[in-house]
Length: 394
Image 1 (cartoon, rainbow, N blue to C red):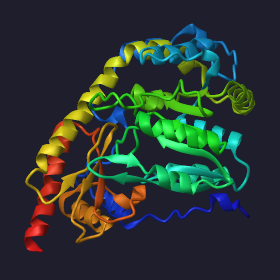
Image 2 (image 1 turned 30 degrees about the vertical axis):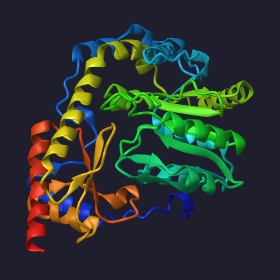
Image 3 (image 1 turned 180 degrees about the vertical axis):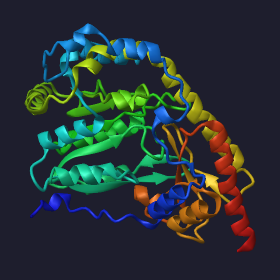
């Protein structure tokens, strides 16, 4: 049997995943600092209210709308009104996930072999989505100098005649970098000049640690270049199991309307968003506000602990503005993978090495800030001790 080359992935587990699997099979304790599922992190949910919202009798009626049920899209617009941004519900497309939204947009913008620019470091999702849609990836770098920023010159230099879109993650995962107004103004001009679309992933946008005037809170109302703003309740409400995301299309009127018309046909081909979650969405927004607040309190608390814990240690935490992750810098006396293996084998602490996120240099580990505070503190103390002991013995 022959299969497509686009699914010819390397499925062999790496050393770290093998060690993790072996440890769990032996029943040994694992302090998992990679967890990204809020439903497994001790977050309290309004169970009765969520179940009641999902039991609405309207869920038994199937009235397919490729853009999503009007009441659900109105709920998304209300979400943006709280951010002081006006969004027309006709410009909203519901999807089953942000990943599906990406796939739909790639189908809309790209022919086989066309290119999309993505930030680096980044996360592996883009490689899979690009491969499944026969799209090529070109990266543009993020730079760090007491804080992360987009290397605008490099971004512009990477654009070719095959570039169809520029992906921006706001805030970025895993660095936690928020897009700045000054950066976005320039990027919009670059995109318009080169006839590129902007694809802005805002799934972590509700998790900024501190307010900043120059920060772009959302691009849902941008107008200079054709822009696709992605979000969903997986992160904003801590409900990944509900499988509902959305795309807001904005920009020049003619391009926006054409993009929406084409996206509607793509969506109509699959009609993947289930009715119960669409019917429940207005209530979910109402009842799960405090879930978002719990998550924000958790990630801020863990980040603050991390900052204070490394003050006198031979390691450091890179500045993070928001999101669910932190980048932890360790001595380059070992590779990232060797550090991760050592921490897991000796202390039972599971972290992600930087190369998982395409960090070009060694010396970076990525940890989730979503972990329950006591477990996070206990695990990070172990990590810092291993690093400190290694430096003493070096």
